[in-house]
Amino acid sequence: MDTENIPIEGPITQSTSVIEWTGLAPIPAAERHGKPWHVGGLWFAAQLVPSALFLGVIGGPGGLNLNYWAATAAIVLGNVLGVIGPAALGLTGPTTGLPCLAQSRVPFGRLTGVAGVLAALTSIAFIALGAIFGAQALEVAFGLNPTVAILLVFLLEGLVSVAGYRILHLFERVMAFVVAAGFILITVVVLADVGGVQTAAAKATTGGVGSFFLLAAISFGFAFGWAHNAPDYCRYLPQSTSKPRLFWATFTGIAVACTWVEVLGLTASSLLTGSSPMASINGLVGGGAIGVLVMVAMYLGVVANAAVAQYSAGLQILGAGIRLPRPLVTAIVAAVALALTLYLEGGNLSDKFTNVLLLATYWIGPFVGIWIVVWARKPDLALFMKTATTRNSALRPGWAALAAIIIGYLGALPFSSTAVGSDLAQSHNAAAVLVGSVSRQALDGADLAYPVGILLGALVFAVLTRGPFTKRGDQYV
Image (cartoon, rainbow, N blue to C red; front, top):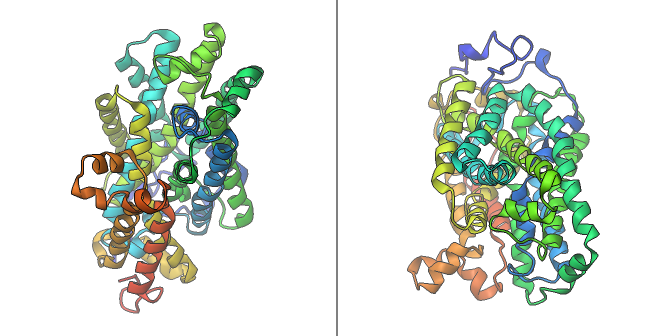
């Protein structure tokens, strides 16, 4: 089999260029650098976004109407369990020096493009929805035209993601402090309003067990949705990097940021009033100069989040078999995300975000299930690398992996709880049997799609493959 040897990935490296040209090729030992806490800082910054704050709002009055402490427990539970996915998958980055989609050639073979397209579409959807929050922040702070504000979001995140790994890490490290300062201001304002906090804790006690697990699933999905991107941001770390330290750096970075911001949103839920999410936050902090500073922090938080997702989206499209330089592919994907953002602008942003968060990430459950089986079988690293660095077209199709994704996703849908499923049920659409039927009829609206998807994906892939590699072809079949 011909191993991957794209010329642009050869002589131009991180040490000689500000722009990263490396695509899916493994990172050589001479280019390895960084420490686990750098990765933790990146993940911390990437979660400091207003969308996470408004996920917390969903648990309070006007949302799922959970008791304040029950909602807090659901957020903590969802994040603690959800972060295990990216924290575990990230460990393969230093081991292989490869991004996730290159590693996916082992189970998917020629069908790696399917995983690449799924992953890229998920990333683009989140970038587009998150960008609307960032644009609103600029509109509120400076009265900008919505289209101009959206363009400014994509201009900065595009520059960072196209520049690549080193600039991305540096940018996120700075944003971890800058954006955190904005959320600290919001936290101080919310905690200072003791009456408002007491009101939030006293209200919303009608939500039941189903609502608890739905909020936990939403929090889980927000953290877990990074799992298939995780190796992309640590593949430059030395192969000798401590796995426990890397695991806990990733775990802590995501879990602390997500839990903080989501609980903050829950606590502030009865205090937020305004014509838009960002106008609500601006009003909460009293507007004026403080409001402008907070809005700028929110804008930068959105950019920090989008730049990380955008960088992975470019690698994911390369994983689909596109043979173009990584920076160009990343820029093209940014343009697609920009177009989608302009299309999605307006309407009920909360409903859009939660629907996309759940329906667009359920496939990651069976994907992680496949990953568990692959690495649990302790594959020979040399054999793994040989397959992972071979072009998609030179491999046989990994039908077992594709079957695991399809069966895992479809099998998980009845256990889901989404607005889409509720709408189908209310309209007596036959598709309601597939989307959320078990959740509605037996689980009081609880969402268990993620664990079901992980289990189904792992089971189907394990049964259909039965071993680490075949002797003929060095890949799963």
